[in-house]
Length: 106
Image (cartoon, rainbow, N blue to C red; front, side, top):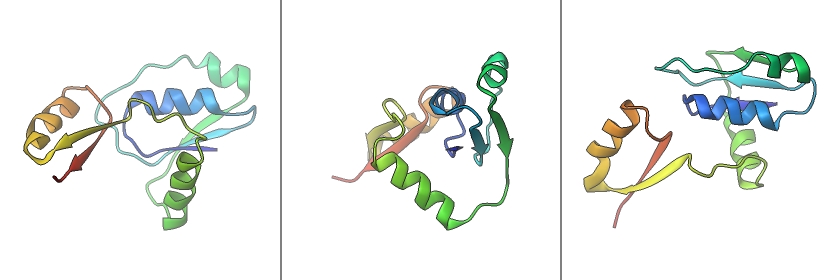
Protein backbone atom coordinates (compact mmCIF):
# COMPACT_ATOMS: atom_id res chain seq x y z
CA UNK A 1 0.00 0.00 0.00
CA UNK A 2 1.15 3.52 -0.76
CA UNK A 3 -0.27 6.88 0.28
CA UNK A 4 -0.31 10.06 -1.76
CA UNK A 5 -0.11 12.96 0.67
CA UNK A 6 1.67 15.26 -1.78
CA UNK A 7 -1.20 16.38 -3.98
CA UNK A 8 0.94 16.07 -7.11
CA UNK A 9 0.49 13.69 -10.03
CA UNK A 10 4.09 12.38 -9.92
CA UNK A 11 3.46 11.16 -6.37
CA UNK A 12 0.66 8.92 -7.62
CA UNK A 13 2.54 7.60 -10.64
CA UNK A 14 5.60 6.90 -8.48
CA UNK A 15 3.44 5.18 -5.87
CA UNK A 16 1.78 3.02 -8.52
CA UNK A 17 5.16 1.95 -9.87
CA UNK A 18 6.25 0.86 -6.38
CA UNK A 19 3.27 -1.42 -5.70
CA UNK A 20 3.31 -5.20 -5.68
CA UNK A 21 0.50 -7.00 -7.54
CA UNK A 22 -2.76 -6.43 -5.71
CA UNK A 23 -1.44 -3.24 -4.08
CA UNK A 24 -3.33 -0.03 -3.52
CA UNK A 25 -2.58 3.69 -3.66
CA UNK A 26 -4.63 5.69 -1.17
CA UNK A 27 -5.00 9.34 -2.13
CA UNK A 28 -5.31 11.51 0.97
CA UNK A 29 -4.07 14.75 -0.60
CA UNK A 30 -6.17 17.38 -2.31
CA UNK A 31 -5.08 17.73 -5.94
CA UNK A 32 -5.56 21.08 -7.65
CA UNK A 33 -4.57 19.91 -11.11
CA UNK A 34 -5.60 16.96 -13.28
CA UNK A 35 -3.05 14.28 -14.01
CA UNK A 36 -2.49 11.69 -16.69
CA UNK A 37 -1.77 8.04 -16.12
CA UNK A 38 -2.13 4.84 -18.11
CA UNK A 39 -4.99 2.75 -16.66
CA UNK A 40 -3.42 -0.36 -18.19
CA UNK A 41 -0.88 -0.08 -15.36
CA UNK A 42 -3.73 -0.82 -12.92
CA UNK A 43 -5.04 -3.73 -14.96
CA UNK A 44 -1.74 -5.48 -15.57
CA UNK A 45 -0.61 -5.26 -11.94
CA UNK A 46 -4.12 -5.82 -10.55
CA UNK A 47 -3.71 -2.71 -8.41
CA UNK A 48 -6.11 0.04 -7.53
CA UNK A 49 -6.39 3.65 -6.46
CA UNK A 50 -8.79 4.83 -3.81
CA UNK A 51 -9.38 8.15 -2.11
CA UNK A 52 -10.26 9.08 1.42
CA UNK A 53 -10.93 12.33 3.19
CA UNK A 54 -10.43 11.03 6.71
CA UNK A 55 -7.18 9.58 7.98
CA UNK A 56 -5.55 8.87 11.31
CA UNK A 57 -2.23 10.01 12.76
CA UNK A 58 -1.07 6.39 12.43
CA UNK A 59 -1.43 6.73 8.66
CA UNK A 60 1.05 9.61 8.61
CA UNK A 61 3.36 7.72 10.96
CA UNK A 62 3.37 4.71 8.62
CA UNK A 63 4.19 6.84 5.57
CA UNK A 64 6.90 8.81 7.36
CA UNK A 65 8.44 5.58 8.65
CA UNK A 66 8.37 4.03 5.17
CA UNK A 67 9.96 7.14 3.68
CA UNK A 68 12.69 7.19 6.34
CA UNK A 69 13.43 3.52 5.58
CA UNK A 70 13.87 4.31 1.89
CA UNK A 71 10.71 2.51 0.74
CA UNK A 72 9.82 5.51 -1.44
CA UNK A 73 12.22 7.43 -3.62
CA UNK A 74 11.58 11.02 -2.56
CA UNK A 75 14.13 12.53 -4.92
CA UNK A 76 12.71 15.75 -6.31
CA UNK A 77 9.69 15.83 -3.98
CA UNK A 78 11.01 18.39 -1.55
CA UNK A 79 12.77 21.64 -2.40
CA UNK A 80 14.49 23.55 0.40
CA UNK A 81 14.08 27.33 0.36
CA UNK A 82 15.15 30.10 2.73
CA UNK A 83 12.44 32.11 4.46
CA UNK A 84 12.80 34.95 1.97
CA UNK A 85 12.14 32.47 -0.88
CA UNK A 86 8.72 31.27 0.30
CA UNK A 87 6.62 33.52 -1.95
CA UNK A 88 8.50 32.46 -5.09
CA UNK A 89 8.35 28.80 -4.01
CA UNK A 90 4.57 29.00 -3.57
CA UNK A 91 4.21 30.57 -7.01
CA UNK A 92 6.28 27.71 -8.44
CA UNK A 93 4.09 25.12 -6.73
CA UNK A 94 0.94 26.83 -8.01
CA UNK A 95 2.51 26.82 -11.48
CA UNK A 96 2.95 23.05 -11.33
CA UNK A 97 6.68 23.06 -10.62
CA UNK A 98 7.77 20.97 -7.64
CA UNK A 99 5.77 19.03 -5.06
CA UNK A 100 6.69 20.18 -1.55
CA UNK A 101 8.81 22.91 0.00
CA UNK A 102 10.77 22.88 3.21
CA UNK A 103 11.40 26.34 4.61
CA UNK A 104 14.85 26.56 6.19
CA UNK A 105 15.43 29.14 8.87
CA UNK A 106 19.04 30.35 9.04
